[in-house]
Image (cartoon, rainbow, N blue to C red; front, side, top):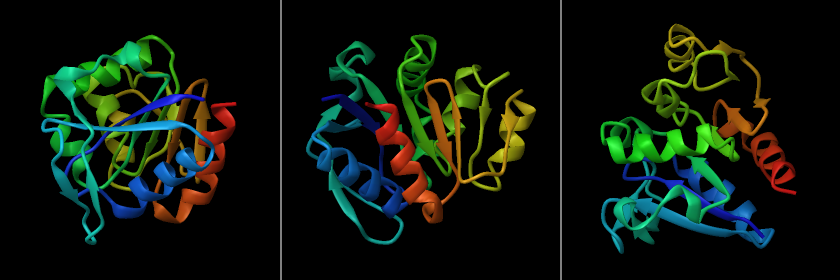
Length: 168
């Protein structure tokens, strides 16, 4: 089974963390929540909580087979820290599976690797991706090689299905 890194902090979109993580664990995948403080309890926009497993300084991309970037305000906050941006960049450069929903694709703008990639995101993020050179679609799920993106919690059934299919 795959080892999946999850970059997340407070104010994540609740279902965009809990639903994919549950789907991954149900299929036997190992999921690791990563932030700046191990053991920290984070809270989503609607009250869901999760506990951080390890810190960004204690992991490296080579430790994982895939990356999950949930939405909400979490990606915008984390992308201000170059360690998280470099982590995402390493996955994209290595063409490892990356799964991003809602505001998660904001990371790709910061990496400088959005140009020419086909993806989707939340309504307000799509223009930013376009101006960063991405080919942007307004579809529930967009798959571009090992990059799987989605728009909102309403798209989670399709997103989870595409994510799990990509890990087989």
